Image (cartoon, rainbow, N blue to C red):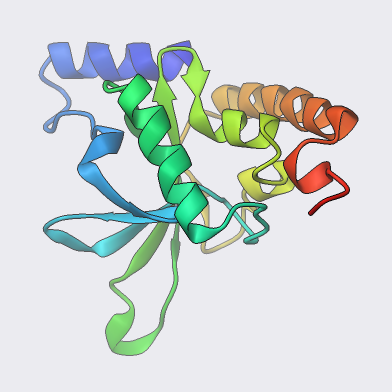
Amino acid sequence: MKAIALLLCVLHAGGLLAVEPLLAKAIQWDGDRGTKNGDGDTVYCLQGRGYGTQSSYFEMRNIISEWLNEHPKAVIVPVATVPRFEGELSKLKMTYVWIVDGEENFNIELVRRGKFYRGNQTVIEDLNTKLLVPRPDYQAFRSRLKIAGDEAERKKIGLWSKEK
Protein backbone atom coordinates (compact mmCIF):
# COMPACT_ATOMS: atom_id res chain seq x y z
CA MET A 1 0.00 0.00 0.00
CA LYS A 2 2.84 2.39 0.80
CA ALA A 3 4.22 1.75 -2.67
CA ILE A 4 0.95 2.76 -4.33
CA ALA A 5 0.62 5.95 -2.28
CA LEU A 6 4.28 6.82 -2.85
CA LEU A 7 4.00 6.12 -6.58
CA LEU A 8 0.97 8.42 -6.84
CA CYS A 9 2.86 11.19 -5.01
CA VAL A 10 6.00 10.81 -7.13
CA LEU A 11 4.09 10.71 -10.41
CA HIS A 12 2.02 13.72 -9.44
CA ALA A 13 4.99 15.76 -8.16
CA GLY A 14 6.97 14.90 -11.27
CA GLY A 15 4.17 16.05 -13.54
CA LEU A 16 3.69 12.57 -14.98
CA LEU A 17 0.22 12.15 -13.50
CA ALA A 18 -2.19 14.37 -15.39
CA VAL A 19 -4.94 14.24 -12.80
CA GLU A 20 -5.14 14.48 -9.05
CA PRO A 21 -5.71 11.19 -7.25
CA LEU A 22 -9.43 10.63 -6.90
CA LEU A 23 -10.58 11.29 -3.36
CA ALA A 24 -12.97 8.62 -2.11
CA LYS A 25 -15.34 11.30 -0.80
CA ALA A 26 -15.79 12.52 -4.41
CA ILE A 27 -17.69 9.32 -5.16
CA GLN A 28 -21.42 9.15 -4.51
CA TRP A 29 -21.61 5.79 -2.76
CA ASP A 30 -24.76 3.76 -3.18
CA GLY A 31 -24.23 0.73 -0.97
CA ASP A 32 -20.94 -0.89 -2.00
CA ARG A 33 -20.95 0.86 -5.40
CA GLY A 34 -20.63 4.45 -6.45
CA THR A 35 -20.27 6.88 -9.30
CA LYS A 36 -18.56 10.20 -9.79
CA ASN A 37 -20.53 13.17 -11.07
CA GLY A 38 -19.74 13.73 -14.72
CA ASP A 39 -18.45 10.18 -15.24
CA GLY A 40 -21.47 8.10 -16.09
CA ASP A 41 -19.35 5.41 -17.74
CA THR A 42 -17.66 4.07 -14.60
CA VAL A 43 -19.15 2.33 -11.58
CA TYR A 44 -16.72 2.05 -8.68
CA CYS A 45 -17.19 -1.12 -6.66
CA LEU A 46 -15.81 -2.21 -3.28
CA GLN A 47 -16.11 -5.91 -4.13
CA GLY A 48 -13.98 -7.56 -6.81
CA ARG A 49 -16.38 -10.43 -7.38
CA GLY A 50 -19.57 -11.77 -5.95
CA TYR A 51 -21.85 -9.67 -3.87
CA GLY A 52 -21.94 -11.34 -0.45
CA THR A 53 -22.40 -8.74 2.22
CA GLN A 54 -23.76 -8.79 5.73
CA SER A 55 -24.82 -5.17 5.64
CA SER A 56 -27.98 -3.65 4.32
CA TYR A 57 -27.79 -0.95 1.69
CA PHE A 58 -28.42 1.76 4.30
CA GLU A 59 -25.96 0.31 6.80
CA MET A 60 -23.26 0.18 4.10
CA ARG A 61 -23.88 3.84 3.20
CA ASN A 62 -23.46 4.76 6.88
CA ILE A 63 -20.30 2.67 7.29
CA ILE A 64 -18.71 4.27 4.22
CA SER A 65 -19.74 7.77 5.28
CA GLU A 66 -18.38 7.28 8.80
CA TRP A 67 -15.03 5.90 7.57
CA LEU A 68 -14.60 8.68 5.01
CA ASN A 69 -15.37 11.33 7.64
CA GLU A 70 -12.57 9.82 9.75
CA HIS A 71 -10.28 9.58 6.69
CA PRO A 72 -10.99 12.72 4.59
CA LYS A 73 -7.84 12.27 2.49
CA ALA A 74 -8.59 8.65 1.55
CA VAL A 75 -8.12 7.99 -2.16
CA ILE A 76 -9.49 5.54 -4.67
CA VAL A 77 -7.00 2.99 -6.00
CA PRO A 78 -8.36 1.24 -9.13
CA VAL A 79 -7.54 -2.46 -8.85
CA ALA A 80 -9.25 -3.98 -11.90
CA THR A 81 -11.75 -2.90 -14.55
CA VAL A 82 -14.24 -5.23 -16.14
CA PRO A 83 -16.53 -4.32 -19.05
CA ARG A 84 -20.01 -5.16 -17.80
CA PHE A 85 -22.24 -4.83 -20.85
CA GLU A 86 -22.37 -5.52 -24.57
CA GLY A 87 -23.83 -3.56 -27.45
CA GLU A 88 -24.64 0.11 -27.02
CA LEU A 89 -23.92 -0.09 -23.27
CA SER A 90 -20.41 -1.48 -23.87
CA LYS A 91 -18.75 1.79 -22.81
CA LEU A 92 -19.92 1.19 -19.24
CA LYS A 93 -17.35 -0.42 -16.98
CA MET A 94 -17.17 -1.71 -13.43
CA THR A 95 -13.98 -0.74 -11.62
CA TYR A 96 -13.07 -2.64 -8.46
CA VAL A 97 -11.31 -0.23 -6.12
CA TRP A 98 -9.56 -0.05 -2.80
CA ILE A 99 -10.12 2.94 -0.58
CA VAL A 100 -6.85 3.76 1.15
CA ASP A 101 -5.57 6.37 3.55
CA GLY A 102 -1.87 5.81 4.12
CA GLU A 103 -1.49 2.28 5.49
CA GLU A 104 -5.21 1.95 6.21
CA ASN A 105 -7.33 0.09 3.68
CA PHE A 106 -11.11 0.35 4.00
CA ASN A 107 -11.69 -2.88 2.05
CA ILE A 108 -9.64 -4.83 4.58
CA GLU A 109 -11.48 -3.08 7.41
CA LEU A 110 -14.81 -4.24 5.95
CA VAL A 111 -13.57 -7.84 5.96
CA ARG A 112 -12.21 -7.43 9.50
CA ARG A 113 -15.66 -6.21 10.61
CA GLY A 114 -17.28 -9.22 8.93
CA LYS A 115 -19.15 -7.05 6.42
CA PHE A 116 -17.65 -8.74 3.31
CA TYR A 117 -16.22 -12.18 2.68
CA ARG A 118 -12.47 -12.05 1.96
CA GLY A 119 -12.99 -13.85 -1.38
CA ASN A 120 -15.16 -10.98 -2.61
CA GLN A 121 -12.13 -8.71 -2.33
CA THR A 122 -10.15 -10.58 -4.97
CA VAL A 123 -10.40 -10.57 -8.75
CA ILE A 124 -10.43 -13.35 -11.27
CA GLU A 125 -7.92 -12.42 -13.92
CA ASP A 126 -9.04 -13.45 -17.38
CA LEU A 127 -9.16 -12.00 -20.89
CA ASN A 128 -11.62 -9.28 -19.81
CA THR A 129 -10.08 -8.40 -16.46
CA LYS A 130 -6.69 -6.81 -16.05
CA LEU A 131 -5.00 -6.13 -12.73
CA LEU A 132 -4.22 -2.39 -12.50
CA VAL A 133 -2.05 -2.44 -9.37
CA PRO A 134 1.45 -3.89 -9.15
CA ARG A 135 1.31 -7.63 -8.45
CA PRO A 136 3.45 -7.37 -5.26
CA ASP A 137 0.97 -4.83 -3.84
CA TYR A 138 -1.94 -7.08 -4.76
CA GLN A 139 -0.26 -10.09 -3.12
CA ALA A 140 0.45 -8.03 0.04
CA PHE A 141 -3.22 -6.97 0.07
CA ARG A 142 -4.31 -10.60 -0.19
CA SER A 143 -2.06 -11.55 2.73
CA ARG A 144 -3.56 -8.78 4.89
CA LEU A 145 -7.02 -9.79 3.69
CA LYS A 146 -6.53 -13.38 4.86
CA ILE A 147 -5.51 -12.20 8.32
CA ALA A 148 -8.53 -9.88 8.55
CA GLY A 149 -10.92 -12.58 7.34
CA ASP A 150 -9.50 -15.19 9.70
CA GLU A 151 -9.89 -12.74 12.58
CA ALA A 152 -13.56 -12.02 11.75
CA GLU A 153 -14.30 -15.72 11.38
CA ARG A 154 -12.52 -16.61 14.63
CA LYS A 155 -14.38 -13.87 16.53
CA LYS A 156 -17.66 -14.75 14.76
CA ILE A 157 -18.22 -11.16 13.65
CA GLY A 158 -20.77 -10.07 11.03
CA LEU A 159 -21.12 -12.67 8.30
CA TRP A 160 -19.59 -15.23 10.64
CA SER A 161 -21.98 -14.60 13.53
CA LYS A 162 -24.80 -16.97 14.30
CA GLU A 163 -27.26 -14.08 13.91
CA LYS A 164 -26.69 -13.51 10.17
